[in-house]
Image (cartoon, rainbow, N blue to C red; front, side, top):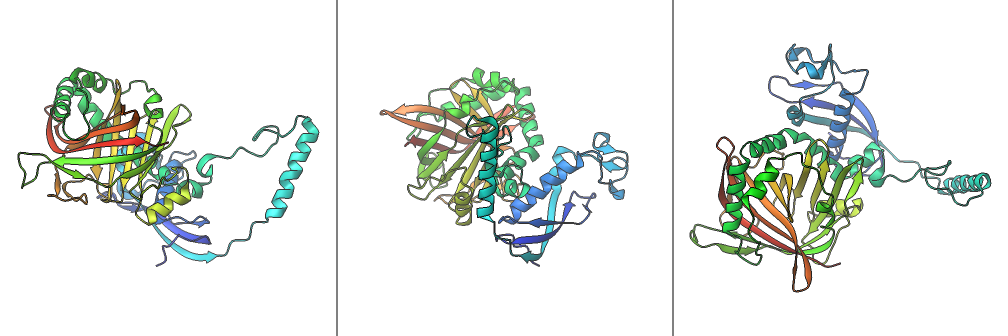
Length: 429
């Protein structure tokens, strides 16, 4: 069966959206589409899942509720008579896409000269009408202003891996809400416990963080919908070289932290972009010496992903969900990480959860590609991190101080679990 979408030909694709929740399994109607873009299977899946969810909410509703789902699933808010108008947020993770490439066709060559003539004629006509010189894009009949990252073309949007990441953030809403609710409920205990964990190890290694206050953390945990200051993202912008070191106890060193140094990370923290009152930032990181990958250069990004020499980070502040982040790790360990964030004075506090490649929470050994015993991830163990700016010897750094912490959301407790990660990202532009 042909499932290869990675070429520049025009591909006729037959596909089905599948719902795989136990006892509610269903294959929705088969469809076909022409795909002109060079993309991988995950991008195609993200595109079609997003398109399916958007289609459910569009009137007139056209997707019938499967008979086997009965009258009680999904809840009334997702039903319109016999038709489906949505899915519970927590159940969108059960959507899959089965597809097959039926045939391929060579694409017609773009008639460049004819297009250029048409554009020049449009400009000439506009100048004749207005007498004011070159028309502004998108105004007075001028050519439309270009949209970033492919505009509204679904295939172009799907080709952008950061769009898939934002879709994953959307599907994680329920997990984020559970964390925020748990932290809000026990904000005083959690704030004190988190502060103690960080303060106990703040002098370890090559990066020292001033002491943090439990009451400051408790204050932000109690306000999960606090207004956002875009400078929280803006100040972390530009090229940087990262010195990451991991500190941990091992079987051979149960009472003394040992230092494990990771390869340098060459990162490019993109500019924060605002759209409809929401903010997004793209970041790339590679271990390839002196290589910085533009987070808006899709060709360079896909080259890095294919060669497994690139990690992606996506920060966002969204009206419905607050401050979020997602990291796709490929180079040293194949994991994902989703996060909610809080602004605390001069630093950001991130609550991060490691995920396996299939997007399920990581439990058990985590192989990180460094010497030492495998890190054991337990249920309700999260990685908390502090991000802040600081000057050292006249140089500017983005600093990250992180550690694994075990949480008990029933009792409001936070307990150090290790390891500790400290990273100094030196600005180099």
